[in-house]
Length: 492
Image 1 (spheres, rainbow, N blue to C red):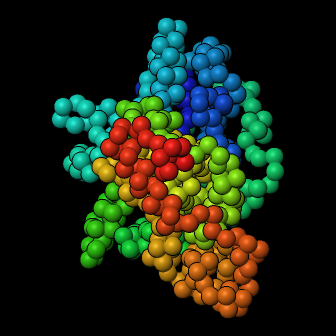
Image 2: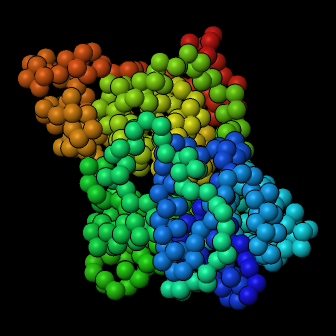
């Protein structure tokens, strides 16, 4: 049988893996390979993602070995590694599933050309998105910049392919002297990841377990519970999707199937609400593919010269450590540091505070999330931060400033989320849990809270900073980014 190298990247699964299935259908012996070529490009793997990758690779290797195959681990430049392996094994072809990050597209294009010149059959497939970003465009061929129109088109087209399956037995692979997982050096040098193990199960089996939990417990109440950070109202599939342990096709079709067999009131609406969130993921990749500069620069060019603060180091540090004195923000940042994940509603709140109350560049927040999130996806991270900062794909976002007190009162009304992650405030009544600086002295004393001592006072005046933000964002919109600071003679 001919040998085909299967280059695993962000598709660490066996089921619904188009590259693997194509090699089997061609009658080849697939040789699974993972090449650790980090750091690669401008966004090398973050620390939390590296933790996840290590355990996901372990799970993938075990699954392959159970089927009679194995996973070769290689470290180094991808083209060199593939060329060397192909020559050593006498491989005739190389298959992979596409990655749509700008640096990956450039690299993969060069690799495909070079390997083809060496006489190899090189094929790539869409295994990580519902639709190719270049395929789902407007009628005039231009990309979407507004989600609603993108969503309507995706609803009409749906998933672009049928699911593929992996046999229970795979052909044995030639012996390769690859690396051990330990030699990839993916785990942190300090044990800050200790709690990760109690919150996550990386790997394909963990992805299926999370999806089953979504269908059996969360989906029925998803529209009402998904914005409540104290509830298990979301799927928590984001890291599994990011590393390709489950495909968006599997999730999309699985949710539709669940709605079909559960013809109860509200089920169709719940399935659509969740599918809409999958569509946001697709939209993020659509934007990054068509506007690759947005990983570092604003989509809206009027924000290129935005007057961000330059003396923000201390405020950024307090934000990163969950010491802003604003409970919902601190709870989110501490959840992030402890678990490698943060509830999406809270992500918007903490991002809004950093950019529109503290006037810290959105890129600083994006870099922190990139290093600390186990689901650090460049497309999602970029779109989320630009959407909140007001410089991304949205109709009129400059006036959207999330008030963390009001957000807390609405989505964490009893304060359970804050009490879990900010135990200094656990004895405060719900009335004051999101704004302790406004609580009567007697209430603070009874709860054992000393502002500035046991818990910090607020890092910024929310009302005052909101007014400044509205003024400056409006000037940017009206004057094309050439504005002064709030006092008219300096940048904020």
